[in-house]
Length: 426
Ligand SMILES: Cc1cc2nc3c(=O)[nH]c(=O)nc-3n(C[C@H](O)[C@H](O)[C@H](O)COP(=O)(O)OP(=O)(O)OC[C@H]3O[C@@H](n4cnc5c(N)ncnc54)[C@H](O)[C@@H]3O)c2cc1C
Image 1 (cartoon, protein in one colour):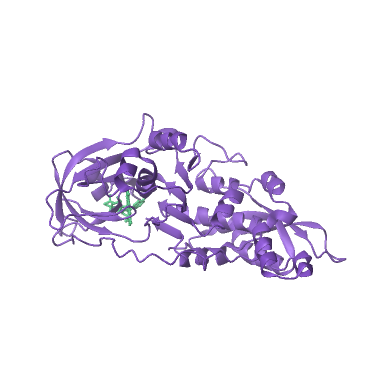
Image 2 (cartoon, helix red, strand yellow):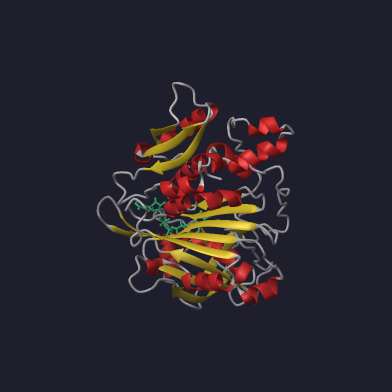
């Protein structure tokens, strides 16, 4: 996992107010105190507070001055946290564990020391071997030649940019180009680079289940955003491979490599819980998971009777930019006990501070429920999308963890070690 240290000055400048209750209040300590620190001192301050016996009731994040243009983390819904997690409940899971460990009632009733942040890594099922996962069946020198069967827009009227759903026929390969949910394939665009050499491959997350969108097991689908930006000279630049793919027509032949990737594989456990954070085309692997879990024809085919809880947090700039939205709404209606769909639409919705609603704001809003799920060793968390989403999510998880008396910098490596924290950003 890439744990981003890309907390640029704008992140470090953001201030967080910790509302602390001192349980071991001495003469010189107030019962409640508010401590305001910048992001880069948040974790060390949380540790210091925990070490001194304080309990963090809530964490309030101030919006950065440039909140209109960069992802902004908002308050940990201070009221909600205070109501849901008063001092006694703030470290409830940790207190429960501590009480269970201790045979002495007296010890259990004493003021808590540092809240226990260890997740149930040791209780987690052994890391799956993933032996059956196909890897690099086709390499750049001898790619598989797939045929485009479909290429259509995933955006609605009024959306920003261009995002296409593209399907390739994989028939006739020897070996057959098989793959599983969570993997990526490589695409080698036609033509040459500026040095006259063939273009290098670009990776794309697979958006179809191993059975393909038509269940015949002979296709693969991608969800591709055309890269467009202005260079320093003010010229409009279009990405080589993403433009090649977005413009491609049914019947065209495409060089495909792979599959690759083991980071984003789903657990086999039918009772696993799956929390998903996606922005933009980061929805591709999540679509494969959700089809595998809830699409009737896929369920019939795969025999995988998912009974856990899946929760998708999806970030988009505008409603018409939400990808596969109707399918996810449908799954939520059909499987209300197993699937929850939470959207953050930055240019339309406001966070509790009145700023733009980003996915990290939703994480903070639902901090209690997210951390209650993470306490369960059957819960896996997946993140996919542009690399820029990582600092925001990391910041939100830090603040959300702190509001429960937990230290995210300790918790995250434990989740990773237990193969429960999966990140693929690009
Ligand atoms: C594991 C993985 C999975 C991926 N999955 C997907 C997916 O599902 N869907 C998807 O659409 N993409 C996905 N990508 C991204 C994809 O691989 C390509 O990087 C993307 O399509 C751009 O390729 P391109 O050839 O169009 O752009 P290129 O022509 O290669 O241009 C990219 C380059 O342009 C420059 N650049 C980009 N933006 C700017 C900017 N704003 N200002 C200045 N310079 C800039 C950078 O130097 C960058 O390296 C994934 C990447 C990885 C690693």
